Image 1 (tube, rainbow, N blue to C red):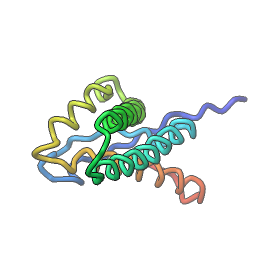
Image 2: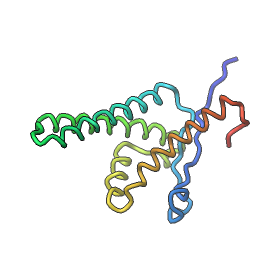
Image 3: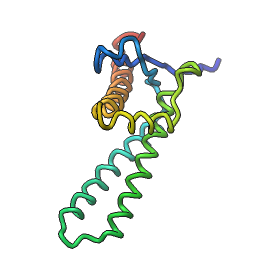
Image 4: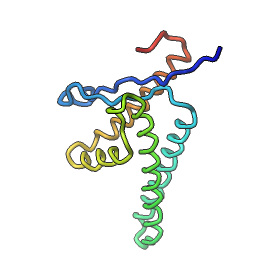
Length: 145
């Protein structure tokens, strides 16, 4: 007999961020495979590294504008990779709840001015939910709802 592991999806309630969001949720796939999680982690590390390079370049009075543009392009590419991972993590529920990369990009752009911590919070809480699920399963702390 072959055991098929279902994709486990749990609600991330936006009211945890702010009660004004009411019943709105993002459905998070909490048991993705290691390949997707490794891709996420690689993007995070590379983004941090590129941000440090960019900070160093901008502090230099004689910075090379062409190199800065190259680093910014690499950062944008890594951001796109992060959005692809998040779209996969937020798109395992019913069709009407699924996110596209373009919807995530729009969310980031539309909340940047008035709600700049919303997207970072969503990203952080998504990863916390995955870690909590994986940790609880390893420890055998009971079932998840």
